[in-house]
View 1 (cartoon, helix red, strand yellow):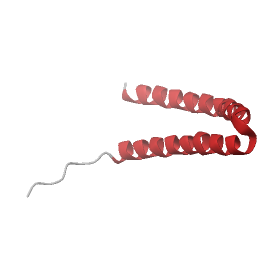
View 2 (cartoon, one colour):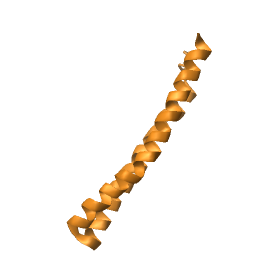
View 3 (cartoon, helix red, strand yellow):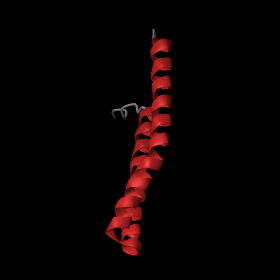
Length: 79
C-alpha cells in the first residue's frame, strides 16, 4: 500500500481563511445590497454598496500592510 501524500496544513488553513473571507464579503455586499434595495429602492442600494465599500477600504489597507510585513519577515528569515 502506498502512503498518502503529505499535506501542507498551513496552506490549507490559508486557503480556508481566504474562502471564508470571500464568502463573508459576498454575503455582506450581496445580501446587504439586496435588503437595502428592497427597503429603500435602487438608489438606496447603490448608496449602501458605496458606503460598504468605503467602510471596507481601511480594513483592506490594514490587511495589505500586515501582508507586506509578513512578506518582509518571511523574506528576511529565509535569506
